[in-house]
Length: 139
Image (cartoon, rainbow, N blue to C red):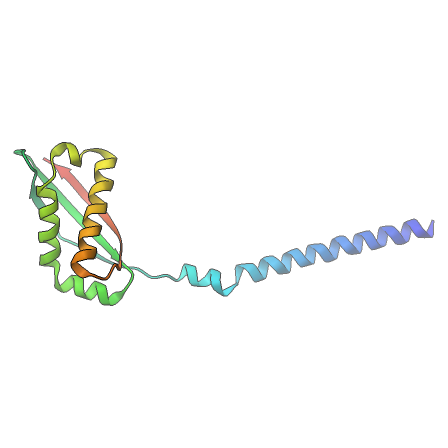
């Protein structure tokens, strides 16, 4: 009888120690430095004013408002000072697109990628993380 009681007590203690270990492990994981640094990655945004662009081989125009996301504040300041170059570059890209190329999700994704690539070349830094369309209307 004593062996069974002793075995049960040891089993309960082992379960309690394992539970405490799991709780401590979760607390350390949640507060680990690597995990906190990923959350703190800061981005900066520049939203351009509305643009109206002609569409290739069409009487229609595209109304577009774009937000550019970058990793560095220095890049944001440079883009703010060179908005005229950005707008010209985007206008050239859209003027060389047909209505069909601008249609649908795939057209938007391709256009975003082209604008991002073009702006990366223009600012030769590769700090642009994403391009967002606030508005893209074809009239």
